[in-house]
Length: 161
Image (cartoon, rainbow, N blue to C red; front, side, top):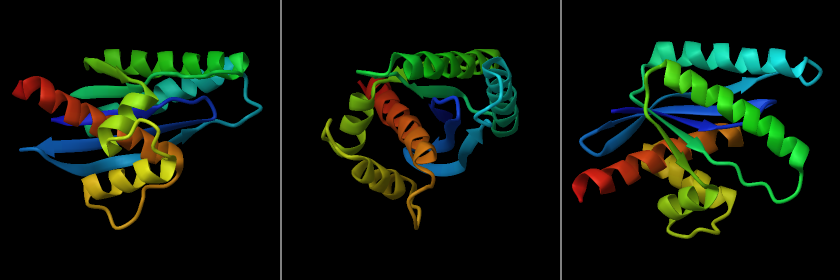
């Protein structure tokens, strides 16, 4: 099973594709889609959709796992990130994938066993789970891989029970 994880954002959208075979996870591809800050918002969304559609076409994931939004303060940022998240989900649906959504708390809890783990703890667990020599960079990429790993672990719980 291949899973693409998404850390939504308008300026930087993280993605990470893992493959899971007999419970073992390995990295297939990971990175970020960046859009220039002063580009009109609709063009940025189109670029995210097109780039993510290309990545899906190239890596052929079976499932998409995307981080749910959690913003306590900045409504404007939340709205633009929500739009990027919607575009990413559309790319996933166009790619005929089921889409799973996880809160940051669920991702932290699943990877570290502690819902208030910091970014460094989550990134280290991503590195360990995938057997990498270094933590994936930038943070958005590591967060996307964390979403993919969470889906793998949560799917296993659902399948095994």
